[in-house]
Image (cartoon, rainbow, N blue to C red; front, side, top):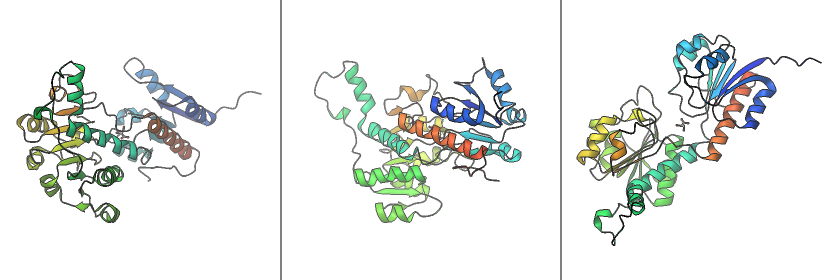
Length: 326
Ligand code: DGY
């Protein structure tokens, strides 16, 4: 008997397991790309031109590409953030966008705490000193760090990830918690004693300012030179959100001039961070390569959720996480 032609076509890009690809293949013809670059962009576009569904991490898609994908019905991103995708164009075309919240919340909060620990206790700088043979005598005050416990943690954006960071700070490290949010968060206030503040007041008071807002027009350069100038000179800035929430040149200047003490950064305006960025050469800066959710367990869970979202959307049941229900 001739094999029945499958109803759907799916383009999958980057980091799906064999089992996940197999699940997609049960209902659709799947074109899988481990990566898309100049060398295979034309093949990717040919596949996209016939696709009903697109799934992947760090998908690069623009309005012109969408115009060449007339059958596309669902985009399932393996990320919680979707600022890299043309939401307006997807909406105009009635294309459903699904993302992967929740499954990465705790891991991303862990990443924030790793950066908090590293910047307060100068872990990378001092580990490098040992590696390079620079530990020759008992260390003195010039190598001391700053406490984490009991310091005031200011969380800019107390959504799911911000709340998970707040829990770690309050319950694990006895930190007073301040937060910004469009409305108050009774659970954070009752269980953690957190207090809501206007951004400027939080910047004035916090010892560690941790950014966990989504990137959009309202949060572009939320932390600019003016905001940095409000921070204590002893304070550290942690960014696990998106690079463009911070005015990067203003941050570099604040770090150089002693306007703030340190920064722990997982996200940058340009990624990968160019190796000649001044941020890579500053002892008071810890940089990581956008690893917020990058653990085996969490990336697997994100990919699975994205597969479930896509299949749910295509076969007609409710998708699990739809960003733009029209
Ligand atoms: C997300 O899911 O948006 C993260 O930034 C990717 O790690």
